[in-house]
Image (cartoon, rainbow, N blue to C red; front, top):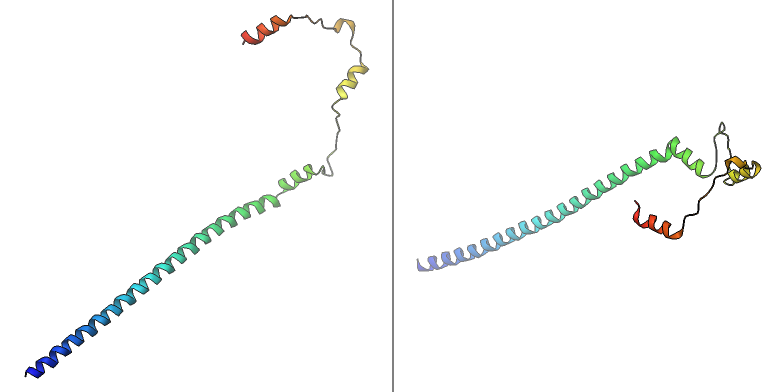
Length: 131
């Protein structure tokens, strides 16, 4: 009987060691699978964020496309390029035209303004102390 107890004791120890080894392999496998799942989830989250960014960019581009396709933008660009509509007429006003008109029509003597000469100290006083 003693021999049978020794063999069964050894078998129990071997079974325990094999069981612990199998348990270790199962735990390691679960750990590995959990890590892979976390990595895959991080990749999925990154792809979802990228998809959202692409969607936002796409909507912005759609808005720009709608604006650039509009008649309003076409008119604005044609004005920048000095183009005009067929029913528009262009009138050119020169900046020095007012001077030409004033030289053509001399001022009458009764329309002449009398300018008073203000001394320099009075100008400074007014500049510094008047609101």
